[in-house]
Length: 176
Image (cartoon, rainbow, N blue to C red; front, side, top):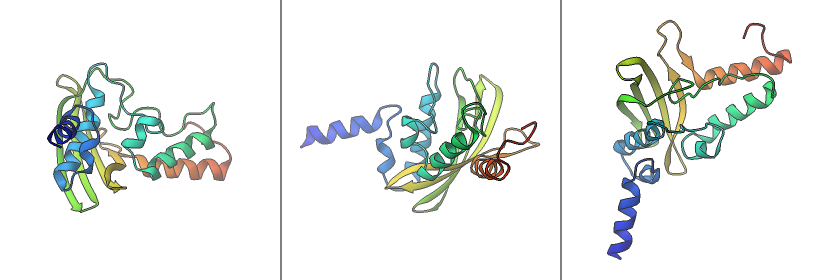
């Protein structure tokens, strides 16, 4: 019995593991985001919103919106996502100076302000996350990128807007 418990504890402590997301309390939400950012280290692969790795990170409704945006835009058009929403970038060498400021909302919702640099001391990113418990584990419900002080990018709102525009117009807006 003790060996089985030790194995569970060891698995929860491994970098990049999502198993700690089942824990209760606000610290589990912070640990979930820390684990997500483990995928953005040197030579990391990130987390694909619509791919297999995205199932353990993003809320099913956000993944569904992203897949719908890709579908309505077709294979020859770029939808809203032309980069990775977790790092607000297309490329990274590593995440530096990661800071996670978590504000619990209730037992099933939390908000977090996350900031980091994409290269040592440069290219600072500022993101707000809305987290939700889905089937007992934390998932990202939305990301708002405040890195450009002139224009915040609300991922969920932009996906919904793009889908609506494409379906209404039958094609993407010129210059989009």
